[in-house]
Length: 114
Length: 85
Image 1 (tube, rainbow over the protein chains, first blue to last red):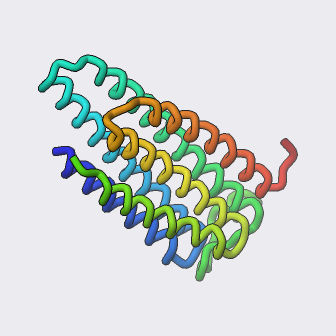
Image 2 (cartoon, helix red, strand yellow):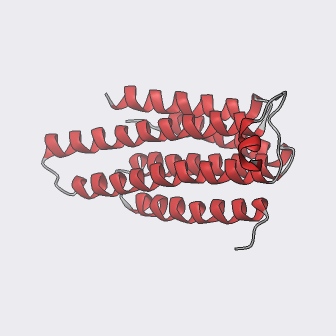
């Protein structure tokens, strides 16, 4: 179970990194990298939770609960900060005049000018 | 359990994103690559904590790193945007 979760997490982290490297544009890079790495990190943290809970259930070692609580706090911090940080980056890039590659119509700019 | 292949894959991901930091055209692309690198470093710290006998110290480091890198991302985004603070 731990291996399945960590495999999914590593696969999505690798896909996010390759997408960051290959896609043509800043917005598409943001799209690929942020979502894929957040999803992959969530699965890696789930793997840690499953492993610690397994040790706790097998050996009765209640100090594993400290690990689980800390990892859940790290998960909360990661999820909240990644989403809002990506939104801040996209808004800053759009307001500083970065255009999407091969874009013809920009509806958001028309809405801001009205 | 053996976690060395997992940490090797995470190192490859971090190397790809750091290459994009140095290559990337323009400041917003570099900022995106740096944000991705921070997320990957947090995930790597979690794997290292699992590798070294389930010690929670590395998780504390990961929490503080995530929050501080979030502050850095917001600050540089405001700088790119060009507004007053």
